[in-house]
Length: 523
Image 1 (cartoon, rainbow, N blue to C red):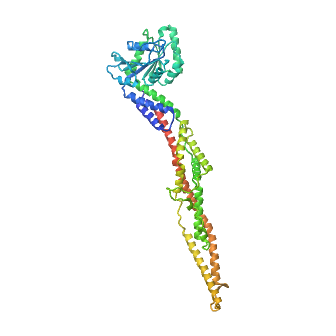
Image 2 (cartoon, rainbow, N blue to C red):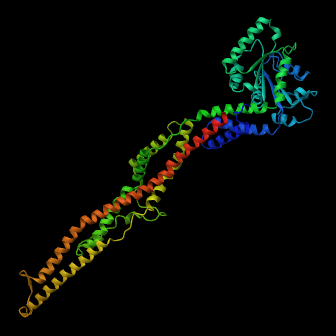
């Protein structure tokens, strides 16, 4: 292992992190394969450092004959035209029964113990069923064990060495496993030197084009023994290194990480324009314009009642409070705001989709699908959350300003003045009826009777004061409405952040963590 090579334990930890992030988010088969690999790695590492080598090949390739030659006895019955290896056979080079648990995990029932050989101590050699067997269970057994063994020796023969079935289904997918794969051209004794050289050259060319340039190619004859010492030497090297299992798992992790990396891209960030558009759409759907209008009208109503002409002030009290009808002020109760119409709902859907598209820009399909599912789940709560947010928002103090209280007191003073003038005039009428009007002198101002000045002046001054206060009342109402709008928009923006933007950002962050873990696992 080179100095920069990441240890297998770190690779598996990174792959485990990637699977944990993807759990419940990515509905792709690559995550399932990564999960299976982690389970396989845990089991394989717990079973010791024995080296499992499997001989695989087609019917008539001499695979079983080669197995017997390496085993030193006829453990597996060779077949020529029909597959005879229905289940895997095993030959074990070990002084004890330490490999039995490993073979139990591999589910290999037929076992042969070889005499002790220091060069091969710890080798478990398997003869697999024929991959081109007419029986489905044989082919499935080959596929299962190919995924579990540490070193795979693929046995080819001069007639079918270029068979597309073996190259496309088995060899080409192992392009990243050159360190755990050997290719053997068997039965070279059937060819003369020139034909054997041509056959090996063509096979080498095929392997190179399939990404297996680093895979070693050996020529052997199981029948005559030619090339067997070289093959045995290669197996002895792998057994002595005690790293075949780790190398196979490392190659598997890299392969899975490469497959997972197809689901990595670049996560986007929601823009201020998208957030503003979302807040406006949610505000319209939540009834913020209706609440703001209610605040303004209610403030005008209260201000008019305080500063208006007391003679007609009671008429305003006959109309209900526009804000009170909405039943706001409690976050635990539903408001009486009208439900969002089709236009508002469409605007919300458009704003959410725009924010989702921005957050998903550069992400692979699997993550954009997760973004869509995430937003759909959280959008189901939007209506209730928006209503509670609007209902529970503090719309500002309803306390009557001091200047309005002063105007109100002045209005009552003017009413009292007019009332004094009216009562004075009534008293003069009574005195005139009693013929005593000449007895009591009548004061005048600029030639006008004082009682008349008091009555008319009080009434006119009150009406004029009410008219002059209306713009001030309207100005205060607009200011309070603007403050209420800001607070409502903040509340709605918080709902949008929690229910829409944060889930989108969390998905983007999970994507970044997933890709970092995948990169580390496959480095």
